[in-house]
Image 1 (tube, rainbow, N blue to C red):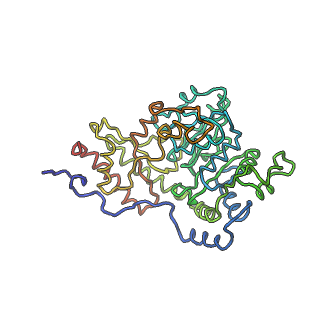
Image 2 (cartoon, rainbow, N blue to C red):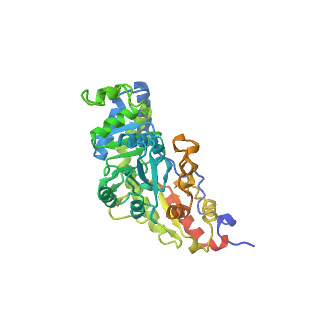
Image 3 (cartoon, helix red, strand yellow):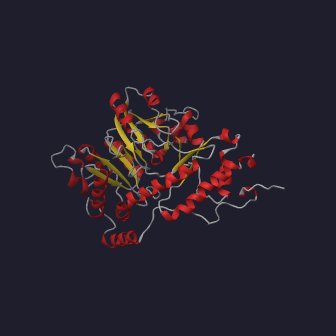
Length: 417
């Protein structure tokens, strides 16, 4: 007869509160009023006015940059960023091999080549590997602040300067994160953020490009904000002003209702992040004592936004127990929000990066990297599980139940072998 305390084997679960246990963004009455008021004001804004201007001004002030441009998605923001940075046919851009695919996919639409570089054991860009991949065609390197954990921006700024590369940032997980007290997204020539549903700052769907460079700003406008906005913001004497009506032919504007939601959420963002820091510290302290589960190392220079809490699973500590089996047992304990990274994964696992020519004729002769080419990225992904990071004091009982569930399964893992 089995007498294991594990719920997956018939024991009592650590948590009996039915899920889901985490939802984002927190919708308050102020958000409902803001969206409802915008619905009565304007549902289309073709220029930089109204709620779009209010949101962009607030974001520029929050980040400490001269210019921000909102877009319909974070992917669109990256597309506009790369276009405005002058990246084009034949150019190469170094991106981490472990990231969400949209960090790199817009480059295909510019005729450029995303050059993948491996990551270190913490999942951040391996600068030694990146240096080996630089060629005469390399134009830029992208810093990705994965899970809201800032990259070492001192090292990246130095790396870009040493090699004569433009530094760009994908801050899609990292709204409000800091490095040495400075906001992520302000170290490079420009940055892009996602305002997608679960991001720390959410518009439901949306994105933003941030920069201090006015020339780059004008080109962002021409890429996806044609006609009225370009005509009013690009100086008439500027050489590109004659393209204002058509821009580059794309319309990537944020929806005013999405802008209203993000604008309502922004004043609460720092409060959310403070709560997440407290909860993340609590979870890390509890899990740091669990053999076989490794919490992330956070540099003293870093102020994470904690988009998620990535944990590393050490199979050798569990006598080879597969992570999938471990996670099934954690779910049986009631901790249903514990998860494996899905869409954030080694880019070599996507068919588009291995054989881009199947969808993009300009790449018909190009065979991309293959699984196995980036062993560190694959290892990090294969051994990562993640938890949401709550932000409220009233969430603490739930938080503790999650860490207890993981500790319980770890302590009794031999029952699963």
